[in-house]
Image (cartoon, rainbow, N blue to C red):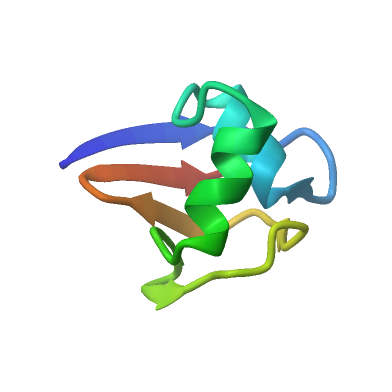
Length: 70
């Protein structure tokens, strides 16, 4: 499993933006499709809210990709 550490400079980032910024998704539409289809997990639980506010300490996983928020 590969891991990315994303340094959050604001209070939160919407989930689909995070997926775009980290390069996990090629576009907002791709990111949205990933979330809706149940491919995205937040702290080990399925996350289907596209606008979920990702905050420091969250761990997002998609397949073999892990995004740690710091």
